[in-house]
Length: 219
Image 1: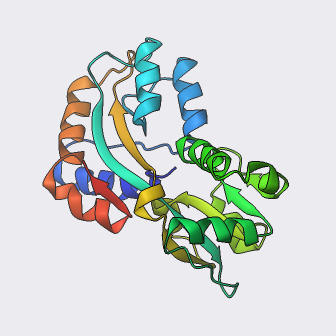
Image 2: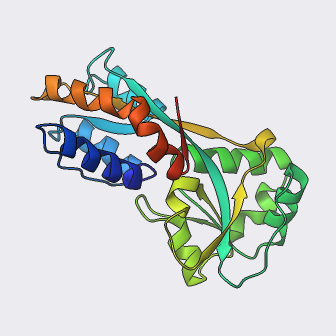
């Protein structure tokens, strides 16, 4: 879901300048991987690089087909009009987490990292009852906007286009986690040549502006 807005924009650009038409289906990364593992027919799959590697190892994605596209960091958000937390450094982020009544985070690599970070800080037990893990495909920011969680952590790209929230900023550099998103070609792909043309476009300088505008960075 972190790449949904970006891919929507870039595939529309690609269609305008090529003979190809793209049918884009977005879902949570966990569900997407399950679809591929179950034999779902897709011409290209875009997920966190670690998930693509697992699908290669399981024989669902062609070996040597992985193409790295973008990297994406985690940001923090609160409901519009709510109190603003200072997250200028690691100590301040820890204070914000301890002060928040409820903390929203997502499935996937960033969610796993956050729980490990809370363990390292020694506050995992203290905040355990306040943690709200969203189901795959449900934006943390949507719960923040509704007031269901006070402090939300998610990929910046997933927070940027949501109304009703204030993005406090990205995690400080010393505790930031960067997720690399990559493409892979499934073994049952029937459009390999077309996919290669698409991936060439997605990794070209033409795509850089859209990546930055959507809170990501090219690789």
